[in-house]
Image (cartoon, rainbow, N blue to C red; front, side, top):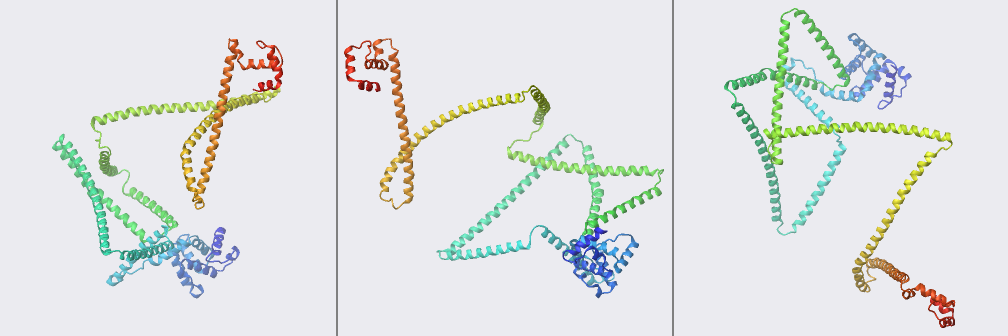
Length: 626
């Protein structure tokens, strides 16, 4: 109860009431104030009830409130005796009666506003039957009901438009945008008309353009008609194929059949069709009419909420329970257990139910067969359109089915192999987990032994050394790969230099010509000057590359000469001929050194020693430097 009062106070303190109540002030309200508060809440739901209760009689106030609560489908708790107490409490303004009503109204204010709005137009006026005998009153009543139905349809459309996401602001924006586009198109048409009026024979050209537009529209209509005729032809071909299929089936049925079997089959079909037309379809039609009648009756009633649906469901359950009780009483009264007809009646009802079920199954089977035939014809047409091949029949179909079966066996075998591999994979995963656990346990034992022996960290150090050696081998491999990459890069650079030289040769020739032309217009084209700077940079790069090339070439030639001299020196030095060996640079250098030091040497006279001594150490030094 306190939660109910707190909810009422919170709702009354909000918009649009703004009463500024608390629990104490609301509980201290008098009966007249409570009735005025209830009238204000009802006036918020239906503006016609926004009145001051001091200006009307208490009976009128109670009648007005009870009428509106009835329209809003308020169900007071209790039985019939409680309803009289509810009316008395509503007249006197009793709190146990007013508080639940306020709580119910404030819980679903928006829903009740909609229901009150619809009730003004959907609550039918009770016209006495004797008044409806007058034609004028009957016509007016009929027009009134038609207007009510029209209002229902318009209200449904309005609700659908509200829930569809479209708003009046968006529609207005779209309308304004379309009007602006219309004005722009009118202005554009006027400009085009003015422009066309200056052209000669513009009337004739306009007539030709109009005729062209008409011909295009006619072409589109003809294309549409052609497409429709193609569709009709396609459907006609399908009907022809179905008819041919039925004719073929009839031929097959007639070939091996006798007149007695055909007559029997026709009688079965006639019996089935007569059962459908005389029993099944009329019964279904009657049930459909009843359901349509109940649906129309439900639509004619005002909108219902979830609470109303719950009440109706409870009533339906109660009525069903009462019906079952009455049926049981009737069966116990008029159909005793020892009656001989009860068994036959049960059997007859069971047979009728089985008959209905079999008829439905037969109808469903026929519908399924017709749909399957349609699908077969459609698939046959698609197969003809795709590759033009015929549908497999007879032995070909059997061969194809056998092939599919063999493939199915292979597929099953492969699936079993996959399942075995999956199981083995799971076993291997479990084995790996166990080995990891054992490895961790062994590592812990090894660490404990190392700590006990005083060499903790030995295994870790060994692993680190192995890891470092592995990393070193990887680094060595990377170094070798880097050297290969560097050599490849040098080769590519040389190729690029040669390509640049070959590509810059015509550019240099063009540059020389452009220099001669640029002498005249250097001050008039900054863009050309920029190009010159770029070409100059390319030339500098080219000269730099050429100088590097010449330097490398010279170094190469010097190295080749030195290598050749070394080879000749080695050949002379290792020669078995003494004369040839004296020509070696080493021998000549040693000979000169002996002359400078006045030492005897084989094949050198004293006069030569004297000459060398006279010449001095300068010539010796020069010779040594050479």
